[in-house]
Image 1 (cartoon, rainbow, N blue to C red):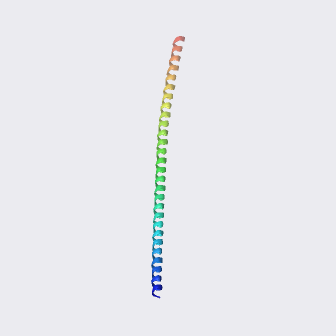
Image 2: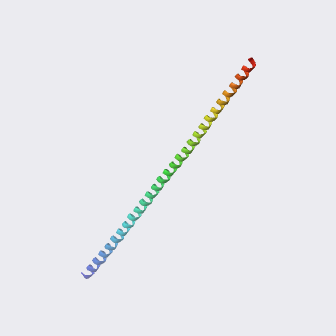
Image 3: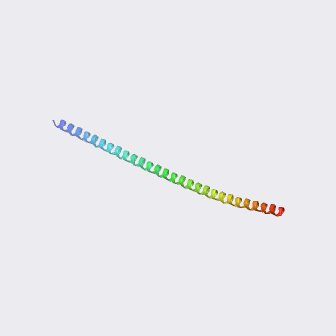
Length: 103
């Protein structure tokens, strides 16, 4: 009977040790899973931040291109107006010359 009690205690200790090892393994798995999820979340947030930054850069580039285009159009409009005024001046000069020839 004493050996049975000793065997029972050994088995009980063995089972307790196995349970503790399993609990520790489970704890380690849960901790590893939490760390993995944390890394994935960080990666996702970084990716979103990079995408926002790229969109901001694109908006800035588009805005700069639009400003340049607007300036170019304003410059062309001013040049067109100058040409129109010069043309009117030349036509006036021609009319004046014609009038002087017929006087």
